[in-house]
Image (cartoon, rainbow, N blue to C red; front, side, top):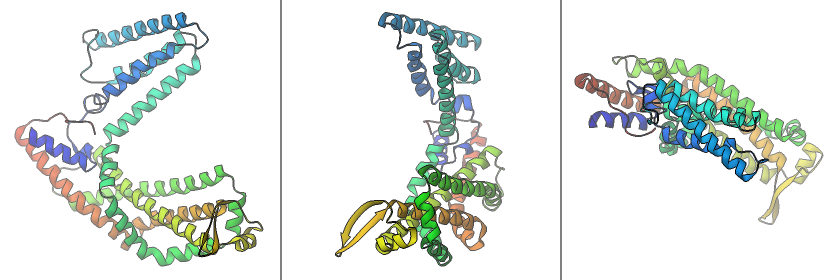
Length: 365
């Protein structure tokens, strides 16, 4: 059992908790978040309060809300065949429905607060989604894994950028000193500028999301051809790890490109150049002297730099999975690490088969 638990910990550390066998949402996901859900559930008793009521009336409403909640919990337990006030060993669909509905009924019952009831229900549904992503898909484990290999990711990102640098710099430099781009940055609102970056990010995400399932299938054939096939959920988990790995590289590249052009713009695009490009000096955010010469960072410079960085990140995300040379460079290290993880999975499955036993995960992930 200790050896099985150790294998499961290693799979979670690799960001692949779905490779653990015999997992269920009721026993392995929501029950691990039970303390958090119980704390939120009890805190939502305050939904029965009404600021327009007197202190004593609110005390009475709070006592009434406690009675309603305890009655709801007792009813759910009896339906599930447990003692009225038993703590559930697993959190199934009935418990989740109760978690959403019971607290949202309190504002309706005490003061007819419809908006508060809807907000409570929506908040609880969102919390369950976050719990499922965090505990079920191992989002926390994936980001821990990504953080541990951040230095290697930065190095790999810059290795790939160095190969793509000639085309990337030609593309970016042509845009950087274009009068139309600076004029757009001058007139564009903050909301539309943010929407532009979000749009490019969504396009890159959609492209990578379409390509990744094919890459996962290819990696599975190359790395674990003799092992049992992955389930759909397990392939999704591998694809999610791959997506986070590439997203981290794209983020590093985008930040580096933005920083580069902010520095270049601060040194080369002075007030006379900005007047030539935009017919105005722009909005200066930071100004200082360097070797006796004024250096100014403007809002327009930041927008132009971020815009070019967004274009560059989009290009990089597409190039990594379409250009054969970049794709091979990106996938080699990831495939090597995944091969080690699949070897762990094979030993884990062999041990489970020999012992004929499974174990409960030892801690949240």
